[in-house]
Image (tube, rainbow, N blue to C red):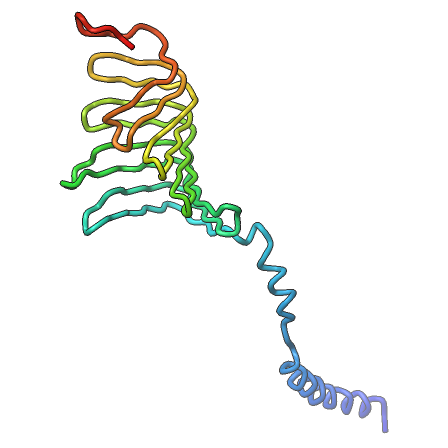
Length: 195
């Protein structure tokens, strides 16, 4: 047998044996479940990321809130789990007749689903239907007592005055609010004494 014949038989044998060996070996391939779980249980893989998201919350067939943000992150593995809505958050709150009651804008928001609590920060601005405006750096919603809070500086603009101070507490629709440490001058009606 010549070297040429040996090379020919080697090529034919290789063409038959190599695919046959691979064909037999493929069914034997398995993923180790522990390795797969370890790969997908890394903290970076626990968060769901989305862009340009809008949520509509309704109750008894009536829209109550519409929220949109450019960046959305949901992390169920965190303790406690949360949802982040960042980069131009806009939240519209509706009354029972379907009219917009308040509009909140901010840069960032974190919502804790289990508790229903919300933290909003960076350029927080709220405009009510009555024309009142609130500006602050941070606002916290406490679901259990149905109130907004902040310890940061606040600026409340009404049709007749501008109120400044440190810290604030307000009800859910901002029809009642109290500045914890007011600053500046406060306009009062004749005969009324400010508290």
